[in-house]
Image (cartoon, rainbow, N blue to C red):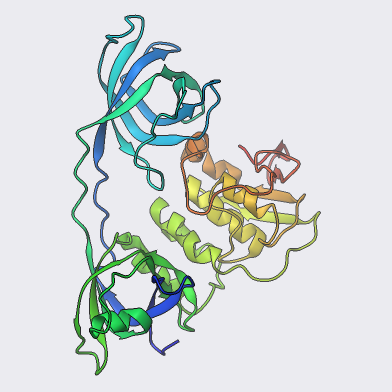
Length: 378
């Protein structure tokens, strides 16, 4: 890696399937910004039959397409849903057609198409409580997507196909690409985004360098205070994450997952979780990672992530005992309110080995004060 590079742009092209280095960049401008408000979308739930009275505020919803036997095939999520109108279904007066407004959760398909021979969809809340069933779904007047966010990558030395494009030797569009933030040693700190290159010009930072204009989602402003704490390597001081809000604590785990070191320790160990700063859902996973793996440690960022960590390769072999000190700190802040909605998608949170973080055989949690035993699902 080039000394002083803060970012590496990598991608694939049509000629080679393996990932290539496209650019090393000294800096970025306008990378950190408040994210745009997600668009609120309007959906029609057609032919609804509800288990009880229909509330006006639905909150988090899981929509599950069903096969011809009524078996769920997968899940699709909406957030902050509320009912706009409800009226008798024209095809079946015993059912309702319901119009709702909601935010579509990220990292999922845009629309859940009804499958062939399907009996429709089921509708559940954040706690997986069945709310009812409906026959079909339609999006009304799809919401306009927000304007793209422009970022400038500064002082970039170009490589491979990107250099060929910029210098006029190639006209084909480049394919998948992603931007990595780098630490002082040039190692990947975390992914910074998936930029679309829209313009370039010679950089005043030196001959042969370019400034690239890209469209990509911004990083939250709080991240500008997190990455410097990791730039010289994994932090040596515990609880540095505690100074950040929930968004910052979630982003703290991005570099943490890339800094796993050493083999798994044997089963039967005891780990101590410092609960003094566990005031929210995200804080629990920051504290859990440090309990198992020390400052800057990682052991999952959601319950499914913990399930993956229990499969091995994350520092500890199950079964083990986790002693949660100062657990009462979490209660006044309602830290457990999001456990019931932990099914919302997170990056890299798919259990793969069948072990469940909600099963006491996987990880036995005991408090540091009253000695009572708790499973990993509070």
